[in-house]
Amino acid sequence: MKRLLLLALLLVPLLAPAQSITRVNPTNWWTGMKNGSVQLLIYGPQAGTLTYSITYPGVKLLKASTVENPNYAFLDLTISAAAQPGTVRIIGKKGAQTVTQKWELLARDNRPKGQGVTQADLIYLAMPDRFANGDPGNDKFADMADPNMDRANPFFRHGGDLQGAAQRIGYLKELGVTAVWFTPVIENNQGLTNEGNTMRAAYHGYGFTDHYAVDRRLGGNAAYKSYVQQAHAAGLKVVQDAVYNHVGNNHWFIQDLPMKSWVHQWPTYTNTSYRQQPITDPHAAQIDRAVTLNGWFVPFLPDLNQQNPYVANFLIQHAIWSVETFGVDAWRIDTYMYNDQPFMNRCNAALLAEYPRIHIFGESSVTNVVDQAYYVRNKIDFPFKSNQPGGLDFVLENAMLAGLKEVGTPAATGWDNAAQRVYQALAQDAVYQDPTKLVTFIDNHDHNRFLSEVGEDFDRYKLGLTWLLTTRGIPSMYYGTEILMKNFKDPTDAEVRKDFPGGWPGDKEDKFTAAGRSAKENEAFQFVKTLAAYRKTHPALHSGKLMQYLPENGLYVYFRYDASGAVMVASNTTDKPATLPTARFSERLSGFSKARNVLSGETLTSLTTLQLPAKTALVLELSK
Image 1 (cartoon, rainbow, N blue to C red):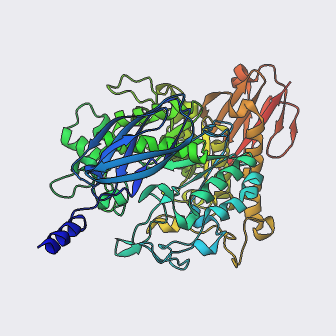
Image 2: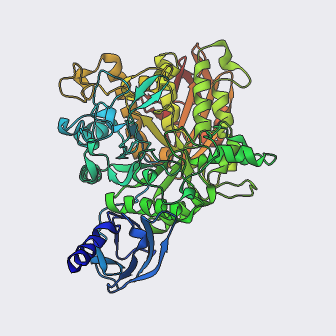
Image 3: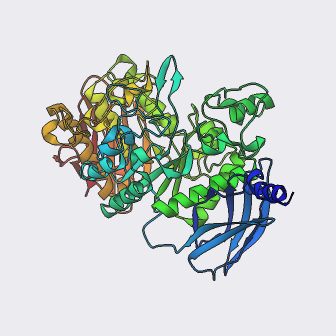
């Protein structure tokens, strides 16, 4: 009998569920933060059944919360100003069992971080997987959900990584780039998805599976931190691409949901309508608003419920952790308009409180100025007021592309055509608190390549880049635009996400070098380089005021100016050379008698009239 009793007692611990902690997010925190509060997500088998305590000078456990899933607990901590860096021990107890988990409290360093981007910058957008491969050893991993790498397959991963991107920093410097924006680098441990009867990889990066891990195939956390440090040493800033709206369906917390309300749940699968109007429409039905905001982006990207306070805290803390850990300077937010907007205000405010200079600009793919203004600081009497400093300027992109397609055609002189479209978009800037904080662009990873959009017309190409690099706002260029990469996204996005030639060992062409580019590609590269360099070094162009004149007969003139000087941009959108009398522009030309053509170096000794070649813009630095 004693033997049986002893055996039974020995079996009890084996039969009872064992408690353990396998994850703590954030993975660490810092002393000296302006906000001394942090909420830890604790995860592990039965971790929510433990009673927690923390004994560490300056760190106080205010509250431990449990949720529907017993594998989770949430600990609210305060970290006093007197707290010192060190190893905090999180202790969980249940009966005779004690679980101890280490958690690091670090000292903040003095590396540059949160520097922001301004009109003086030129942002270069690249997809790490398609830009350059510096370490073939991390191209694929057998233990990941997608173990494939095949450059011959446009839908698979191609092996580009952060080490390869770091090796091309010199190329970006030569071009005149001052800030680099990568599509998301966070782990996307997603399996292949079937889209349009084609199996596709998550090489784009928009389906996170672990917020606190940079994807191993890009080099991991260490490679990202190293890239940012190398970029900063070279005088480049780094923009991180953030995703709050959704995660990948293989995310570890989706595989074991903390609670039903962690994601938006519907009786049956409900996709977003992708319609912008119900959000700002004062007459909109609630169901239409709900579908736009809470419907899933696609079936394999679960839609996070940011009205859940635990979800909100998780996302906000990850944003701050990323800036502090990696030292990034600006924050681009994916699918901004699909997020809960009060949450976005809270998140923006938290980032700006810690990093007052950081620039935040979201993607709201809308078609009109009113809807675009809704998502940034604006002057419209909306019931909701956004605090987002900037945003991607889709309205101006649409205007420039539509107008450029009419350049050199009979429509160029039409009432609402060609340059008139650009003029009219900018004429509505009064709705924004500060339109100079908008990020301007003419193509990106979701749109047709710019050269293809303008019919592969080199004059239109140069005209569009001139507008981009001389008008108000913070310009952004998509990788390869400077070397005339082309294609349409129809039938697939992969067509506009091709590898940068020369980014892989053994590539037949290396377009990172002048020798590897054709004469026309070098002309395009030099054109961008000249304008980018001029913009960077001339305050009147990159931070001066904008004054534009109503286009007449297909001729469009605007000025960038400040107390130190002025730049005149005169565009001819017709297919014939034109003589432009300048008396009409006396308000801005008064006091100036000469000019230097920024692109050609030619000196103009008289400004009474200007000769404008067909389908061309002159950029003139005015002088007395």
